[in-house]
Image (cartoon, rainbow, N blue to C red; front, side):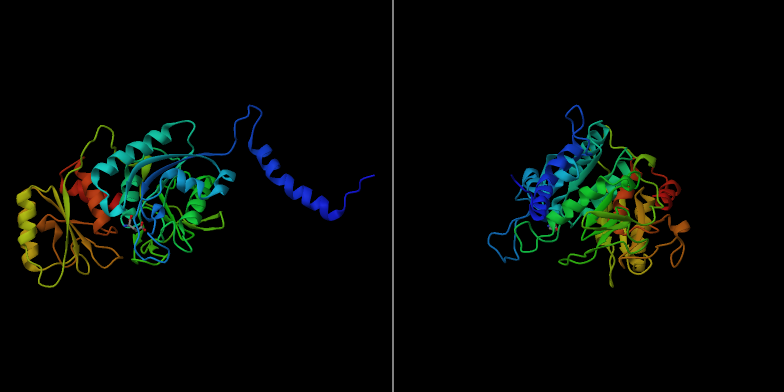
Length: 361
Ligand code: DGL
């Protein structure tokens, strides 16, 4: 007669857990009832490889989307994952054309009834700009979560797999719907509009200095904070449909002794907009102001933002924006202001209408 000891019973129950999990997630038709997540990969450090262990140097975008998915086998407990490689670049090479291509892919994926949310793997260098661009042109309330890493995939303590797992946990969480594009790194959830990269190497590089984080994750559990106040995704006036280029907008960084030669040159090159990363509250030298005032007269949209990294760049403080014809970036830093100005210029050249966008988005 066979007997079952308490310890072997425990072992059998533990052994049966994976089978039970599978039974839970497969419905009568044999289809999984787990959410369906599409991962769009673009390269970055999360897909980076060192030539040898311990190297500080590495090549971004060395692994493809399937490698990233296969590196985190537990993803299959959260979602049915499909992957697509959109581009394979370090995000320092991100450009307007790839943004348009990526935005179209995101919208196409989210329009599919068999996709419940999108994850985008991306380098952290320009993640804030890409995420804010997508936040303005994605036409869906389904979750979009951008995930990166600070350490390459081959590094000791690589952070990519945990970030990807938490990113999928966020994208499959009911609270993610309608929050706009989110960024997940280092157990923190950020709103695309709020983040900025603040440290060149540390894991806690992303901060949301003005309005704070969207939430936190803890081993796949998701905790939400306040919703985003600004308009986003399906509530914006912007669309990339049929668009194959964006108006040229350049950024100039203000500093002591700033001249106007490069501003004049940009105007000659035919830029449609100039964003100044101003000192303090969006200030710059008198000579630079003169150059920009002439630029405005020639039809160039000029936005003043701040190089300080946080705070509000408001209208008519030390400079008379009404008289000069300048636009104030309000809460956006220079790189985010460039994104909004490019999209704004696809809709209007009117200064007041452009200023209104900076209050709204
Ligand atoms: N060059 C970088 C990029 O792809 C590396 C930084 C990162 O991905 O974290 O943005």
